[in-house]
Image 1 (cartoon, one colour):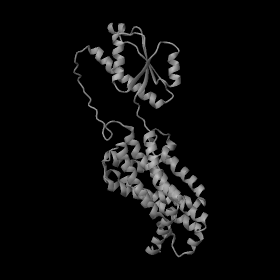
Image 2: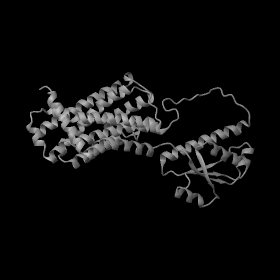
Image 3: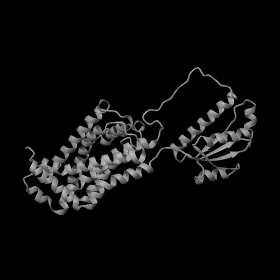
Image 4: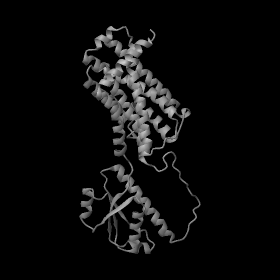
Length: 373
């Protein structure tokens, strides 16, 4: 059965009219993505700067002061206070006043002067394992650099091998550059499914479903007609969130905006179809919203690779991530934003986006036929 354009546009206009009368849905459509992007963009960071450092300097020598000055000059450590040996060290770590306590022993300068390796003690708050690992790495790098200077004693050493490291795509290793493009993928997955999850459930609650069933429109016309307004809203949200990411968070955008919109079109179509499937199953707006949050938010947030690296997950969870569409769209957004890659790199993800859109659309059409019967 073909698509009648007149009936199709009539369904789309009807959905737009309902949206204009429903302020909650309009807020959800336009304000929530921006709010989530700003909140998550500022709240989520893996950068560790201004490490609160307390020092127990038992040597009080020019060498120990040079070590403390080197820590302060690095820009990563903030020397908050000098402590005396004793229980105050535990108290500072327990209260969170210090993330790192550096203990310099009384024989520090004498040992260095004798040409013997000196010992330092770094006490780190390990309740946040990720931050503790980074703090230890920074500390070890600083101490290793200072140890090299002491060993050379002003002489210049020409090593036989020199490694020149370069970081591509995120040169400053700023976590925000990888978080914001990932947020675009996660937010679009959630918002798109939630928007359409209310459509059919709303028809049931308002008692207008029977009128819709009585019309000669086909299932595909109803589904496409209802999806079109939300697809336009979703694409606008992608543009707004991407622009905010560049303007507000200084995230580079090196790829093709046209390619991003094309792949977003397929991803949003699949997400909207999934939302309509949820709506047809739920029969109430509250139930549909709850189901959409569970089915879309948790997998997109936890299993897409946005928060946690997929490679370090247990085997069973890694297998589950293959059916999470946001996993592939996240590769698309990060690839286009940071790497500037094109179709030649993203063709697999592009094909999966097309497959997801077809699956979402078919699910929506099939479940809607079930409701009509």
